[in-house]
Image (tube, rainbow, N blue to C red; front, side, top):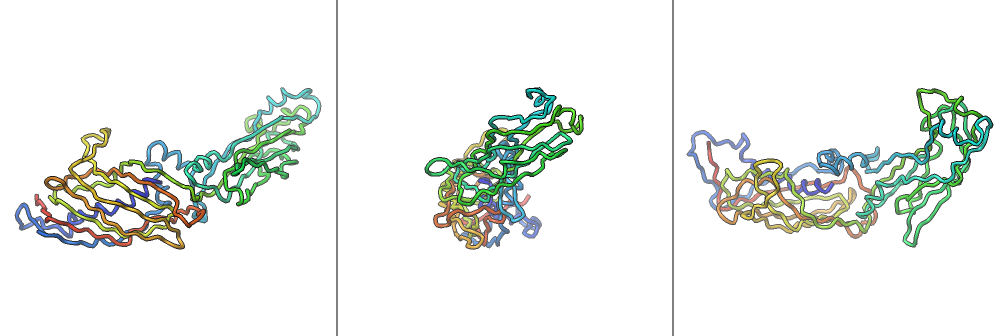
Length: 388
């Protein structure tokens, strides 16, 4: 996500070289070098459609390592809100192994598993480290039964979550008595809707004294020897993600190689880009430093800052919402300290993200994003176009 916030600011910068488009082609009938705009000129660049969180999610898999992992757990719901999903197992045992543990397999009996627990909200807990809050938490409990007969069960089930003063445990009465229906896989028993007053992710779900009422010789009643052979209790955890008032992503240097500026051929010493943006993401973005990167000979080469290029900036974009967008206007000045500007292979940005004060807890939506309402470039000291 952080790459998309940065990229949306930089996307407009390559437009300064729009004079290389066909409609500005002046390659016939002129000297090989042509200098224009001896003093300065301001060029309107128009606007651009919003770059949204949804479009950012579509490109997560392009970010090596972390991107693939996030793409697997971050999704967009039918209501366009972002949600986290995790699927796992709370209890599982092979029917043949279970029969071995029975005191006398020839006699129908109640078999007690003891204590079983699982941790369904691991992904949501990870986001909580950055101040993102879960909302609309749900846990669907399903069961698998390999036998061709119903297997009743009882338990003392509960879920646990953290509070400011400790942790709380809530009983789940729907699981005090339930049935593993015959020949079922992922048969839903109950969907737990966690109250919105619970502002932290569910820590774990536990079963105390989980007991199955088994028939005699259960393996003789397996429905399909080549199919499912396991008794299991599974979960599907979902929650929306919301920006809490404590959200903070500290300053980091992040290379943005997508912002390539092939400006050397124009022999320009300095230009400024002024942007007016609209932000509907409930996060305030501050870019404290931008440095130009030198072109690489090989993709595997390390990033190298071009110290001859000075980029003056102090970007702050307040956070907003879809109902109440925030607006900001700022200018980037890019200058060659000596000579003219070289090609820029990317930018190194130091940025920070924080929750926008006053918005409270705000659910993240795929429709939220940053829109560049208007942009203009001011070229100074002339611009020379080599015609070859």
